[in-house]
Length: 526
Ligand SMILES: *[C@@H]1O[C@H](CO)[C@@H](O)[C@H](O)[C@H]1NC(C)=O
Ligand SMILES: *[C@@H]1O[C@H](CO)[C@@H](O)[C@H](O)[C@H]1NC(C)=O
Ligand SMILES: *[C@@H]1O[C@H](CO)[C@@H](O)[C@H](O)[C@H]1NC(C)=O
Ligand SMILES: *[C@@H]1O[C@H](CO)[C@@H](O)[C@H](O)[C@H]1NC(C)=O
Ligand SMILES: *[C@@H]1O[C@H](CO)[C@@H](O)[C@H](O)[C@H]1NC(C)=O
Ligand SMILES: *[C@@H]1O[C@H](CO)[C@@H](O)[C@H](O)[C@H]1NC(C)=O
Ligand SMILES: *[C@@H]1O[C@H](CO)[C@@H](O)[C@H](O)[C@H]1NC(C)=O
Image (cartoon, rainbow, N blue to C red; front, side, top):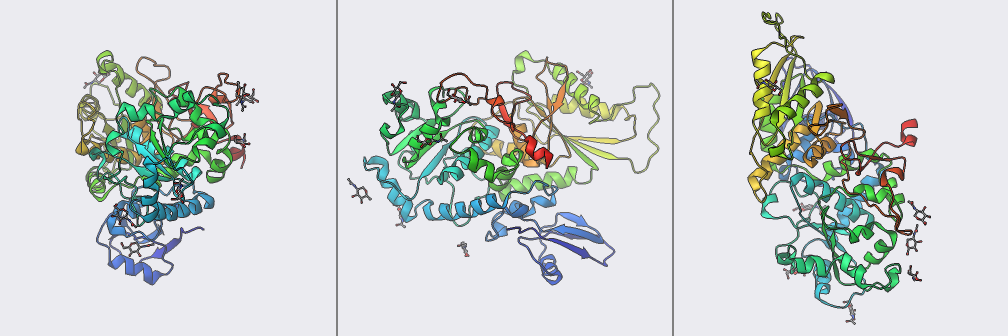
């Protein structure tokens, strides 16, 4: 069902009216003014004639939610253009039925309690509710893309996704599912053992397959009550069998799957049976998988939303154009900052993303009273790039008279793990980047992938420092890259090239061995 409604408001008020638009679809002008009078949370100036798209993210948001528990869920489109990529009606209905399932199976429900009893029993008669317990690995960007992939896996297998986040992820996101919780309860019996190698390896898919003489016959695989899936990039060689049809048949019966991954493995479900068909039905536009799932799952909590909106209003709101520069330096000791800086400048100048400065000795101040104002938002662990760029635009005028402001919310020198406020700021930065009109991101960085995917636009990806020709390239799709895709054919066990298997899969710009979903030819012809 299409829940999005456009209302044309003609106001005779001369002064700008500040207001926000609340939750659901309202069809009459009187309803709209009812909303206006309640406007406590002022966000965007709307003048005289305004065309308002009531914000429900194209139907992704379930209208039963109370706005006050999560302002971002209803206000994000006041900061970001509504995505032209609409989710399929099938995806919307699938999300609504997933929400029902999650409410039925969620923490401490009767069904949950019953399934929990199976954890330590040999009785594996089928259960109504089956679960994926997601376990974090690596930094925030990796976690976000891995949760999104795990959620797609849950949708495809009718499982319920529970998040075992540590305290360092407390309060980053709103609860995505109505009247229930996606957080794994603190009293979950095996919670303290998720990091232990005993649980990770003795009960892993890999060791199950190894111990089973007949890997190729799913019926003879003994089904345990729980299984650990190591899908992280480090140690999942054997578990690449995870992506095979037969393994998936065997996993069907297991009530509890513990899933550890730092990867965007969503593209694997578009590769082969058994999920290819259903995944394509959910996402007829394959480039939009992360954009829709990300905007559905990851609404900033009220605290994070405060960080985002205060920064936006103070520094970015008045700019005619917002340019996001996400600069990640992976090997700091071996990479001189000047080399990175050279590369950023040659990318942004060559692609005309930033104006050149006038280097003539006597350059005149710009005569214009209302010059075009561009705001550059830099995110980096280091202050040097900010200092260089802001200095460059302060000491010299631009050749075209544009005025450039440069901002960097934070620089923390190194990536903290296990620190809630660090993650809160990182999340605010990712989100602010996603609101840019033009985005430049670093190779290999999941932080940049998330900003690009949430924003729903193709970024320019900086080449790795040292690979200077070209200094950057336009992304072929807004999807994140799956860095370590399956490399073997499940039946023949031969090596395969996953980037060659379908018209909607290509090698990533920043990692040839990786794959990403792109618009396929059929879509392009429509
Ligand atoms: C499930 O178990 C928890 C704790 O053991 C208990 O508090 C809760 O009431 C149970 N739920 C139901 C619906 O029985
Ligand atoms: C297994 O659990 C089901 C449901 O709780 C129960 O009906 C059945 O009797 C159990 N089987 C055994 C062998 O314990
Ligand atoms: C969800 O819970 C709230 C109270 O917490 C209640 O008012 C609302 O009706 C519930 N919604 C649904 C769909 O159950
Ligand atoms: C499994 O594979 C082995 C060796 O490839 C083969 O001999 C056996 O027949 C297969 N079993 C089944 C059930 O397909
Ligand atoms: C997937 O595996 C199941 C069980 O082994 C089999 O019945 C089914 O035909 C397979 N599907 C495809 C498309 O290969
Ligand atoms: C900024 O970086 C460029 C490229 O490394 C360098 O040539 C320039 O001198 C730097 N400017 C400042 C003000 O640091
Ligand atoms: C995998 O191998 C089988 C059997 O050799 C073949 O039929 C199939 O086309 C291969 N699949 C891919 C994706 O290469």
